[in-house]
Image (tube, rainbow, N blue to C red):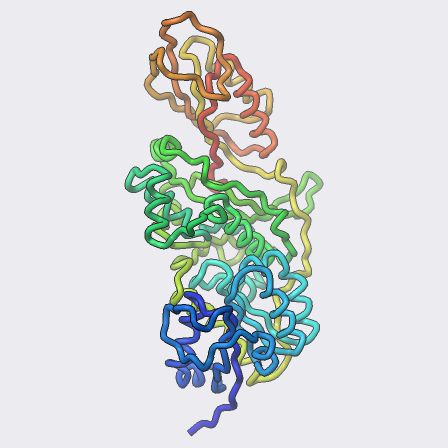
Length: 455
């Protein structure tokens, strides 16, 4: 019989993920010991309220409010509290004394990752965070290790399950944004305050992490352009479907080349038109997916559950086995390389494509005027669709419509045009949209969405 050394594991937090991690450690400890090469002893669980109800029935004697004391006696610390503080202070304490740390805290890694990685490297400890992005999906380790010798060109991620759930129901069931959000809240996909999800803050943090690892460059959250889904309407969904697209909230991280020929990178989060034949268009419900384009490996896609207590616990336990193996074998902890440090490309210089919906006066000369607007900004048209003209004197003009006064009771012929562009800079395309809003031929710009660049 093999005799395993014992490593002491401290758990900070016992929410939906923490409770499941504790359960696995207690129920599957023998099997984990065989995988890791050491026996794992859960020495305690630090929580705010030991008497609070839990998702899992756990031994009461494990709970404590003294996280500091728990850390002092641990070889490995698992932080599943969330938020910046006190998690940042506690992780710093753990690393300072040489303990390995595992976390699922995306906000902390996105905002303070570099300083924590530097500390871990200085003391020779390991800081692992597979569960911080895309839940159960293994994406951090493949980017950090498996693709370290390749050159990653683009990372496209559906990394927020709440927004994917909402947009998917709008597409497949025709629900309004309000109805889809209500159901997402009832089913537990959305928080009571869904701002972090629907405004893109959650995906922004994850994009910063993915870009940092993929391009070996420190990317801060503030450098990631952000736009949420609150502006997406049922009409946008219908227009997208008619043009052969599905709308997804994408985290887009990509390499670029500056005018001087130097390499640069960009990272952004926004609703994106994905062609219906692209693998990301088939990601339904609350699932996540990350699509990677690399020089040698080609196209890769990682798909699965992006949240959930049991699912995310799987990623945490994978990191735990990795950390324990390092303890057993000895040696310093390994960290992701951030030595390339490519510059960030200004958002107005990013190349993209737009699908622009405009309501116009249905009269001769309009198309020529619109073509002139695009041409003046150096933007070429790829597609143009026109819906059936709408003739009504009851429609109120949109807030951004530029229209001439009409006689009372007159019937004004209108048409909706859906215009797709070729690749152009974000700055030029924004200027086109503003010019359209100022045009007398345009009653309203009713929709502006980016098209996935590879389409």
